[in-house]
Image 1 (cartoon, one colour):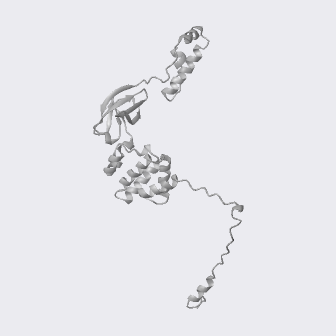
Image 2 (spheres, helix red, strand yellow; image 1 turned 90 degrees about the vertical axis):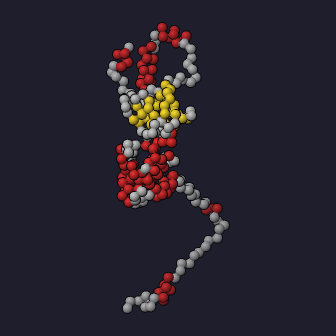
Image 3 (tube, one colour; image 1 turned 45 degrees about the vertical axis):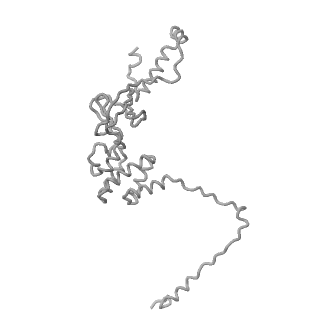
Length: 248
């Protein structure tokens, strides 16, 4: 059976795809089997909601705003430092809950002594210690669109508090779609706008729909009197010139 299902090795990208692949292959193998058909008639119906195959464990958020599960560490927002949390680990995700409310979700790591850090969890701390932005482990420019680091360098070169402005710009991803924030930073570069307020202004304009102007129908303006505006005679201004506008 193993050779039938795993030779050649199935080309899948997740456990969901693997489960679907196994379900389809097993169903095809059992189709027409009289013993299987007789057994399916005796099976009880599946429960209305699937059983959650998860493992629960308690942990305490350390001073680096991380919790440890098995041998690996996962970040949570810095405001939970020192708090006790509940870890809910499934086969592919690690979810951290505080007072039964989810505060962070990570893909589960199966190696040893690895870290999963989310930049957004540390933005409040970086806002206070913005000078450390370029050297911290949580800010990885390669994980962001290239325009982010390009803009950060321009900000830092023009403003001693440029990194702090940049952290505030990163926080905009909490309120606006990430693609719009990226577009706003790109436009700010092209307009030579290097500050948080400028990026926010561009972002608001990108996020605001233009009004749909519908022209009036001719029958709606038939009773409006036509107004003729006579253009001014600009030649009168020539009299204000000492030479009357002529050459000397």
